[in-house]
Length: 458
Image (cartoon, rainbow, N blue to C red; front, side, top):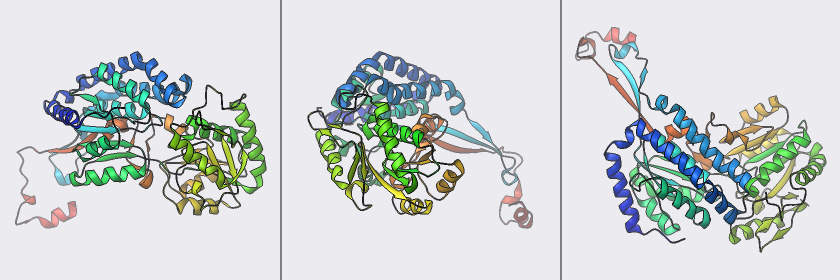
């Protein structure tokens, strides 16, 4: 993928600043029209985007639609339905201390924004935030990942075909382009990717004190307690780990299985893999492969960190890694240090839930947390841990509910989005107090003659 030149990038940024200053994007009618154009453009480009996802990631149409395209349509429709209400000026309660003033909250756009997306869900993680930026009244420069060149090229075609460059534009490139974008001044940056790159971004933007939304990742634990429905747990966990071949920021990263049900779970996990892929995963049209050779080699390296209980086969030519369950894994092994981002699943056992709580809380805060067992026990564990989001007796699916926030905490992210929270992520809530010129109450002025009365009011 050829880098967009620095001169072109700077020209785009300058034109978007001028366009935003014109005030056009503040009109809700303009935003709705732009969202409709985005929806219509996505329908036109849906097939090229899905074809590109297959080319880069071996992602089938069904999975591409469920995990990428369909979610974007949902974001757009939600914004179109509710934008007038979201953008409306709100009158707020005024306490006695500010009477006779009236209080308001005005949601105004942040301004010129940058959206940087990763390669694992390259369509959804670029265009879902864009729907929020458009709904809020911002301009946007989009930067997709160079690791999925076919998808990035299709996204560029879609954006050029749908929007004027002065409003929404897409630039291409590697770390050199990222470095320039990170050094450019923005009104807000929305970044999805690794914590390591997020730290570079945050450092570069710190001189501007730029607001940021960071959607990162981490090692999301998956607990199977002794009271869990083993077959359902195995099926939903296998599905969550195999989705996008584990290249998902909220994929269950490692397993904690109660020692009393370990053997039953391992047997059930093998059966559920067979249920999901009756003819295996190597030649399946529904199994994603590793994005590039470096990722393939990195994830294959984890296979030596334990004893293979299921899977373990690989093919470098197609970057295929079989879903693999690893036993006898040390907490200090490499597979337990970094987010795996692949279909390798280390398994550890526990006797008491306190072991799980102590282990999870001793590490960085994960993006997701999964518990299988009794609901009351789940709430107990959730109350003693923290994560960006969580599921009880399920995996992944919390991301599909636009009525609850999606985002990380600490090392796994900052801020949240989806539906109205996407709108809010790209908005500033401005407080406004409107005070009439009469009456002009004297008690607030020096020399505070009625201070005893004011003290009672405060």
